[in-house]
Image (cartoon, rainbow, N blue to C red; front, top):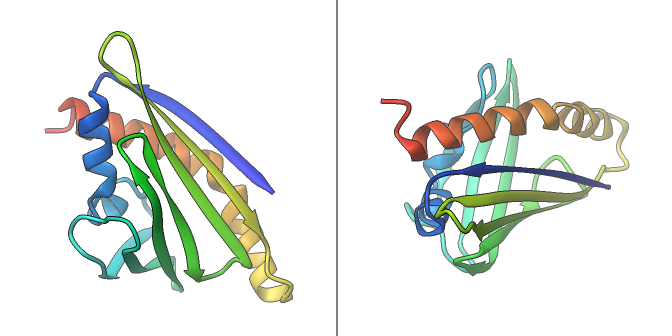
Length: 149
């Protein structure tokens, strides 16, 4: 299955790429009431790096480990190595725009686990993707454009 989302920011592509390579950006663009806690990752993510984190959905901890792949100024992929899905590949693409801004495009390819419990968790998570990415777009713009203090 696939989910896609895109938005634009007035920030230049170099700034967008640098922001997305920072491990701390995950928590900065995760909407409440979800809490994202990074337990292991380099400060700046690069090719082959892994990031271990927990998403707290209320009292439910979802542990996740992702590997960063195909890194360039135009984007990267984070691939789930361990986590709630059978497969998860999140493509982050950054396209420079003529006016100096950037189009940020996310494409997620995922498969649910066959376990009824994990399939239900995965379904719940994917049903929330439109709201999650709407928040991420708003928050990313605010942080990169200086509208959030």
